Amino acid sequence: QVQLVESGGGLVQAGGSLRLSCASSDRTFSSYDMGWFRQAPGKEREFVGGINWSGGRTAYADSVKGRFTISRDNAKNMLYLQMSTLKPEDTAIYFCARALYNFNSDSSDYTVWGQGTQVTVSS
Image 1: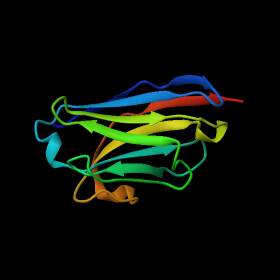
Image 2: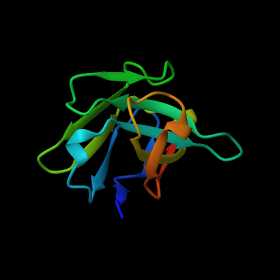
Image 3: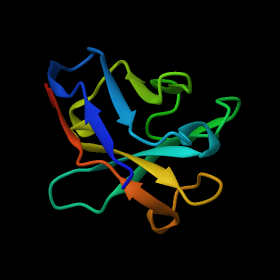
Image 4: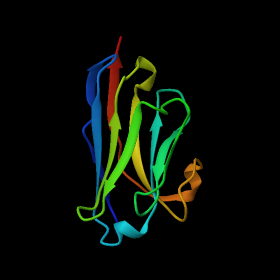
């Protein structure tokens, strides 16, 4: 059973930064594209961004483009989300997920999910 465990969430002031981590128990981690999603209270889960298996290709939602950066360390089975210039509207639970095939914005194409980590941005 593959497990994904997010960490690094917390409370930060607007304009601040946080780095989220996602640890995978999967020995084949380097074979899979990965994604980050978030869900704010009362809202649907939304795609934040994704990274391909090698780390050579990334894509982001327009709402975070230029502020968030996704990276991975395949030797450590780790996925990261560096968030900067945070805004109150970034407040949400953030999830990492393993894509079935190529990463995209459709959450139904992801078959393994972490439990999420809360990010709260105060104004």
